[in-house]
Amino acid sequence: MIGMGNERPGNRPGLRRILIGAALAACLLPALASGTIRAAAPGPAAAGGAEGVAPVIRRVLNNGLTVLVKPNSANDVVAVKLFLRMGAFYEPPQQRGVSIMMQKLLTRGTTSRDARQLDEAVESLGASIRAGLEGDDYGSVTLTTTVAGLEESLAVFLDAIQHPTFPESELVKERQMTLDRLSASGDQPTTSAYVNYLRLFYGDLPYGTTPADYARVIAGLTREDLLNWYRKVYIPNNMVLSIAGRVDPAQLLARLEKTLGGLAAGAPLRPVEPTAPRIEQDRATVLVRPTQASFIILGYPAPELRSADRPAMELLHWILGGSGMGSRLFTRLRDERGLAYSVSTGYVPNEGPSQLFAFMATAPANLEAAKAGLIAEFQRMRDEPVTAAELESAKKAVRGSYLVQHESNAAQGDFLGRYELLGLGYRYDEQYPDRIDRVTAPDIQRVARQYLTHYTLSVVGPEPGKE
Image (cartoon, rainbow, N blue to C red; front, side, top):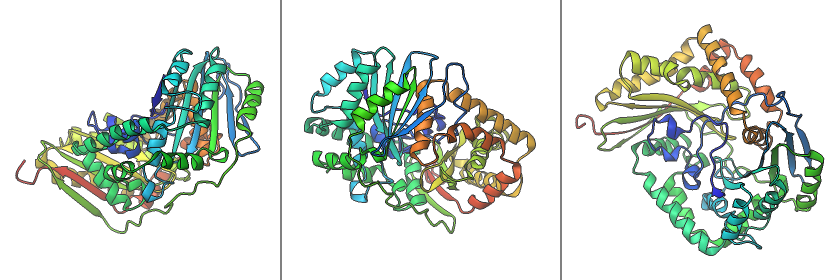
C-alpha cells in the first residue's frame, strides 16, 4: 500500500484525541493537509537491551547521508524510514505549503512507474510506503516490509525518493482535495480556537501559519514549484535513513552506499525565522460563535526540543494536565469544581519556538470562572513545588509509556532517526529515561517560573448572556 501522511509510531495521542473527539484538525496545520497527526513529541525509552536486539550502527556516507541500522531479530518486520528537514520552519512565506504538496505527490509516479504501477509493485509484496509531514520541522518517507520482501520493496522505495515526477494530473487532484480539507477545517470551533491561539502566540513566525495562509499558497503551486523544492530538500546532507529489523547490516550498508552514495550534496536548509516570539504581556482573543459550549486554549512559551529544560517540562505537563483523569486540571476544575466538560494540556517541543497549552471545554455560564481557574493552576505550578507523590507518579507513568512506545521496529527506528535528524543524536533515545529520573521538584518549579510568565488566551463561544 502506498499512502500519504502517517501518524508517527510511539506518539502520545494527538490533539484530535486530546480534545475528546473534537476535530481539532489544525493542531498542526500541515498535518491537516497531509493526513499526518501532530502530537506533543514524547521522550523516548531505552531502545536496546532486548533479546535479539543488537547495538545501533551509524554510518555517514561521503555525501553526508546518515544511515542508522538497528538489527532486531525479534520478528520478520523491517521498518525503513527516511527523515528530512522540511515544512513551514524552512519555507519562505510565499512557499509555505509546498512541503505538504511535495510529500502528498512524492509516491504518485516516478520516471519508470506511474501511480498505479507503484501501488501494484508495493501491494504485491505486502509492503507499504507512506510519505508525509511530521510537523513544521521535518517530514518522512516510510517503508514497512518483511525480511522476504525487503530487497524488492527497497528498490521501489528508492525509486520513489530518487525519481519522483509529480504528475500534473495528480497535482490538480490532490491540490483540490487539500484545499477542500483546509476550507472545511474552519467549521469546527475547536479548530478556530487553536488557529486563533497559534496566530496570536506566534504572530508571523512559521508556526503561526493558518489554514487560510496555506490555502493561498497551495492554490497557486505548480509542478515546477514542487520539483524545485524537492531538489532543495531531497539531498543527502539533509537526510537520515533509519532501518530497524532482521537485516544484515554489512550487506544493507553496501547496497545503500551503491544506490545513494552517488547523490550530490547541496546547500543545507536553514530555518526562516528561528527566533522565539517576544511575549511581554498577557494576550487574549475572543471569537463569538453560536456554540453550545465555550472552548478555551491557554498557552505559554515552553522549552524547545533540544533544551535541557525539556524533561522537567515533560513532567510538569504530565502533572498539570497530560495524565488525564489523574491530572491537577482534571481533578480540580472538572471533578471538584464542575467547570469543565473536558480539560487537558499539550506540550509541543518544536525545533524552534515551543509551547505548553491547556484546552478546556466549559459551559458558557462558567466561562469566566473556567478561565480564572486555568490561569490559577498554571500560576500554582510557579508558586508551589509539586509533591513527592506527584513527581514519582509522573515519572513512573512516563517510563511505562516509553516502553510501550518502543515495542515495534517502526517505533524504534522512528525515535532513532528523528533525534539524529534534529541534532540530538540517536543516543538521546536511550539517555532520555535517565534525564527524566534526574528531574527534581525544584527543577519543575524553576522551569515553571522561567516559562509560565505571560499567557496567550483564545476563546470561541457564544456571546455572553446569549448562550
